[in-house]
Image (cartoon, rainbow, N blue to C red):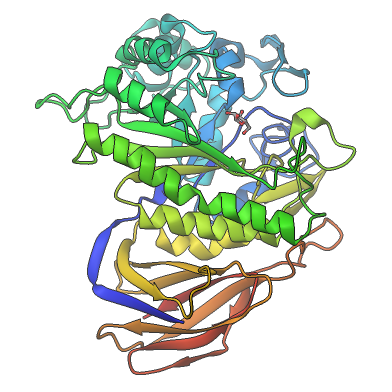
Length: 494
Ligand code: AHR
């Protein structure tokens, strides 16, 4: 199989935020996964667990979405500020009916993002919150002068406003966020977004309109029809800067999504087929967006994506805790390749969710932590962040379905990153990467591979890991090698 790379044709910048993550007050994501409190025996800095923060820093996480998810449209931010012993407790009705003690709130979220060195993305409450509540939250977070909310923030110990990069106006308002019709949400969106004020003209908040569930193209069309406004000439922004889409995949056999670890070829094929469906979703939602916004000013924000399997046996069904195998790694690799190739429209994506929920990069059990196969894919792919996509063409041999899939970028130092997935379970492929003119000088590679069900456990945390890949030959215009079945690979070519 030949992979032609045109190093002279740059197709646009891959927004680093495509490699974003999502954290919700759900199961053990926030509490235990990210935040253990300052009194915990688990090593922490200001309550954030150090092992997890250090692991996440190594994959250069660019942005973290919070506090939900469905939780966002039930969250009242004022319950999560001030002295912790006086914070209101609430029932987390969506996720297991647990008691939420609000010990992780706005201040803790910004502290976490500062430790991670990532951008901030807060999702507001449209479903059960008021315009005033949303507007005051934005004032609390971002206003530096004298005002009721800025004064309250200062009283709670934070003198300076934080940098709020992204703000979502509700979540899944077609479902858990209020069961709205697209028209109804669109009208509310116009109103709520008006009061998401920009207190800093030099760093405006990027406003995200709540978008469709998977292939609900009518939702996308309706909200754009009602809410799309060309930015006024004197400002860079219209009513929205981004429009979201959510898409989850699994084997979905009957009433069950299927086990995360105990599955066969049929489930592998079904999951991979659904994951490859991301391409069509982006094309079709993108085509609707093009009708309103041909200059592609609005970003497609895929702020929830990933594999959704059955919960691990014996765990709380409301906690969505699942293991993570080579199947999840291959889904991550090929989905990120699809995002890279659509970097002209896709400006952010957040895998769901960062720790202990759905397709996580990190799992914890008490004081123990492990890195999942998906983590290793994010580690290999981090070089694409902020790089420029290169034109590429994969020439398949024979008539069969394509089993290898790629994306290629070049960074500021001229180093080319090639990422590849082979989703065949049985067949290796001879590969030849061919540049137009470039003569490869320094080449290095790494790989994540294993049997389809291979995964890491707390007793055997290194079963699936990123390994150096050295079995390649460098020629005058390219690199040749064999890509094993069920693997994700990365080359850096200088
Ligand atoms: O990620 C889990 C849930 O999936 C989120 O809370 C919701 O937005 C989606 O349905």
